[in-house]
Length: 210
Image (tube, rainbow, N blue to C red; front, side, top):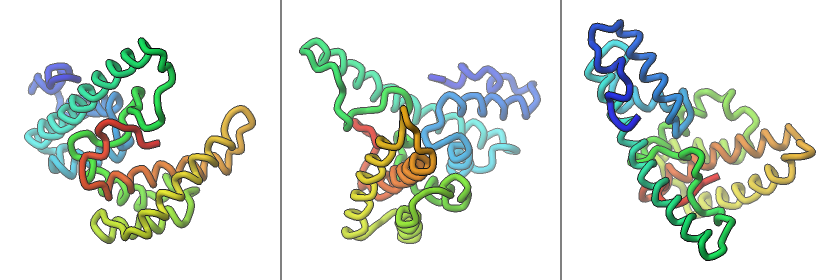
């Protein structure tokens, strides 16, 4: 998905429009930095309704490609750093380093995308139904404030993230405590997007947010 011509349905205007929407869906399957449905929703926010407007459809594809290309550049640099670290015996990456398996936020527009995603998750509460109530409250506060939190709330969020990182670790494999694991995981997903939303720069660059 480096360029539009890697999704051939976009280059053949004679094809049914639904096929071209399906082609975009296939691209989102491969790169969905804020989740599949949230990525679709954000593309519609930035490109306008693309299910009935070809120009908007092409804008949506360009937005997705641009973000993925930025992630690939960062990923390439990360892999080079890891190769160099291994040469000097540093086999285990630091927790603050990039997640090489998948992006964790929208590269190139992480703050706006994160604010959108916080709202998306709160509107679709089944996705965060098991999240901690304090994390949900901070998400609502962040959304109402346009992506801002007071310093005390920021500190509380950091503390909650540390707590739920530990809870997810101790409740995971091999003796999985599903209720606590799900609570921790959903709380961390929501808190990750809050952290991106309140960041003053591109929160994706150079590190991983679990």
